[in-house]
Image (cartoon, rainbow, N blue to C red; front, side, top):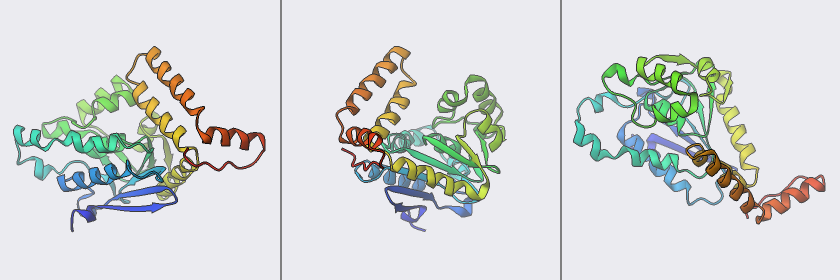
Length: 258
């Protein structure tokens, strides 16, 4: 299998479907796979017609974590020189909304990958966890930080300190999962959400994502200012005029991303 084959990409009506393709190892996140994921997501920044992304694995696993056999062989300097943060950054900085469609295992780096998305759709049989402590390490791609922001200190502490694997229903109850659906409906539901988002005014969608992500780390006053300025910017877009005109004229709007 070539590096290109590790991540399959398909496009449908303004939506990119990104599928992790290492089924023989439950989509474990090898370095070649991480590099390919980064390349794919970096390419999205230049696609003006792309409106949303669905990130998924297969029925058995979204991604079952890092490649332990690989990590067992390296030390501090080798780990540092990999600069994994740059590969993860390509996903975190994707301007389009990203929806993770999770079946099966999302563990360790796999759960961190799902948390890089903006919406997580999970099947009822999906399993989540940060079990790194069980092999003598800890989460290093957001498992302590994104998780704490998503579910709060006490839930994050329990998951990271014990390495416990939880069912999708519990993940949904704690606020980690956006939508919980039947296993065979995960991809269809995620794609439906992506298409709904893709039909909306792109600049407004992009601004909403940006303000939510950056505002959560700012003071309330600074975040509200950011929100207000973003709203004001949208009043100069053609899509704002079209959306309001369509509402008043009781017709379907036609958005252009202008």
